[in-house]
Length: 137
Image 1 (cartoon, helix red, strand yellow):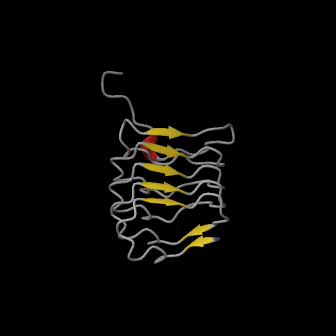
Image 2: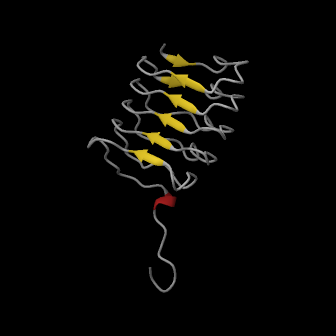
């Protein structure tokens, strides 16, 4: 499997877990997981992904676990992780990230695994820095 086309999971509205680990996936098309409202586990580790399309995880309100480790991801699109209020674990280790993803929409209890020393953040999204409140910290 080298790509995840839109419609691959069409009609599979009750699927809770997708395991695509260890393929040669280099691209995921927008809408690949559309209408999968109960999807709570997405494992795409050990592939050739460099990014994911914007909106890929829209309406994935049940998502609890995402494993994108050991790909070639340098950036994630703005807003990709918004609305994932139930996310408990996000695995990004083993990716050559150059920009920290916007994590502002994730629950405070979400564990994020950045992993090894290949992570080199050269750019932070606007949400990564917030000035201290008036009067100091």
